Length: 259
Image 1 (cartoon, rainbow, N blue to C red):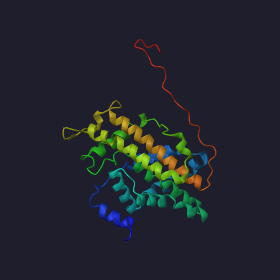
Image 2 (cartoon, helix red, strand yellow):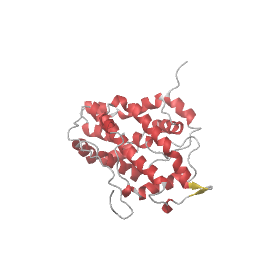
Image 3 (cartoon, helix red, strand yellow):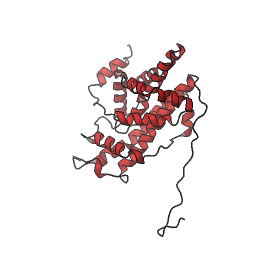
Image 4 (cartoon, rainbow, N blue to C red):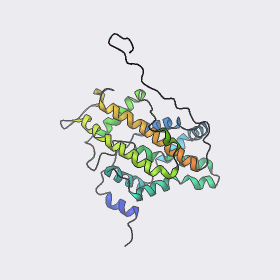
């Protein structure tokens, strides 16, 4: 018996998978810009110079792959066929490089941020039931309003040295971590059968913790994906940014004296 194709699996699964929300475009662009800060100076500049074209290319994300990811986000497990399609999509820039179509290749490379962005979003990995109406919108609005308060934290420094062949396992880890936090969004933004106005929440609410961690997770995942692919392409990886560890300062006592 022939193995079902990815397209056939998508056709069957689309009837049971609810349509997924996604980071709004302005947040996606902010994530991509922050991810560039983790790149070597040359690649940061090359992607930055093509930012507008990259954002436009990202909007052309293959529908079949988007549907496959949507199904897997609901289940929490990336299927082999989905991973194969994702790998094929991220590697589409290699032939362009070989043909010396460097600018086009860089646009294709930059646009691969769509995959790690979706996998990093706890609002997408909530299971087959999905979020109550309006919750995803309130969550995204809350993150956007508090963006200036969110620090970029490096999840795993070693991941920035990852090989492209290891990306599939890394992507699954990213999805699993997102799914583990998704329940908080519904619990805090849907109370007694009613939508909570996110403007009434502040940084002390658990939603801020989830949003902050998810934002950093996405920034890390984008940078890891770009770097792994660029490394395989033999791109320049010199002049990497220096990552400075930051530790909490001494705690203050009630009289204001540091311990």
